Image 1 (cartoon, rainbow, N blue to C red):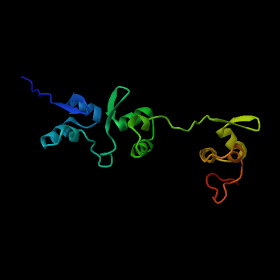
Image 2: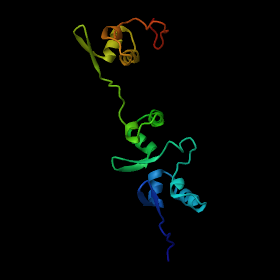
Image 3: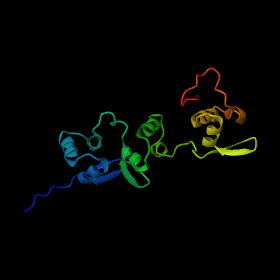
Length: 162
């Protein structure tokens, strides 16, 4: 007779899964989950990530029908993990934290009858796109945004302006 293990069902955030299913979802080994349970951990404690740095941040969430740790959602979307975790720390819900960046990289600006992308304006005016976006966020007029002058009181940084 083959050895069979009684599949224990764990409940976490309204979802019931076996230890093996939770192991696949969380990336933890089934033996880690079982040993934590044997040591007296609650279901939720047994399913927490191993890394102390991620312990409070890499929560298991369901997004678009997929139940997985935030790190797996981040990886699947090709996002920067630190950016997403900063959004979570700032109070964003998990779905908001995984949303696309606010900045429109192909954003076009019109000035003096000419329409160009931010990258094209930056090249034309010897500015960085980050400089233009910063001026836009500061609420400056289009003339101020596309001025090739440095912002008063701030040293120029970034690429060599020769």
